[in-house]
Length: 221
Image (cartoon, rainbow, N blue to C red):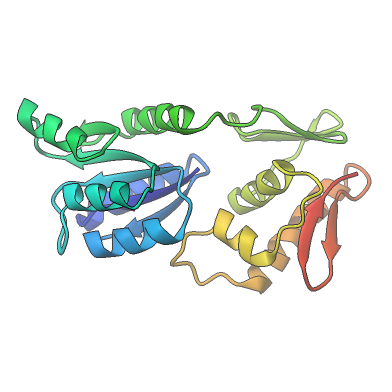
């Protein structure tokens, strides 16, 4: 999943970001409503975590604006307000769910997963290309039955390739899928991770990741 986290409390934002990244999700941070709108208009997110009380433009205004522009991404409102009228107001502005602070990571993760299931059915849990298998739910990658430990970014790149075998992905597309928008990563970063990924995969069998010079990468037997 790629998640937009809109939260102006820096400590809370960093804590939630770290926790979600531990689930192998890509998290973009925005600290005010105007930046949140810019991000949501630019990237295809699986979900948006939206604080109510934001500088420049509050969460309900952001939510209404996104809905008026036809952006249907699932939105979970985060707020200290727990009165019934506040919850109704938050949902009426276009939010799909409502979570009262303090936020517990396990509950947040469960709500995000539920939201992603409502938004669009995910592909089959187990991805298979030749003798290579990847399970997004467990983070386990195996080749010919042998488990291959991967770093987080390697896993995200491989998952992206395996969700659409044979499709050519540019370096920019892989950057967008595996790194947050404010990352300093570039083409050389992608090349380095592909090199390490190949080293691990090819040790267990024939090469699967192909390079199309000047264009990008694809996977297939």
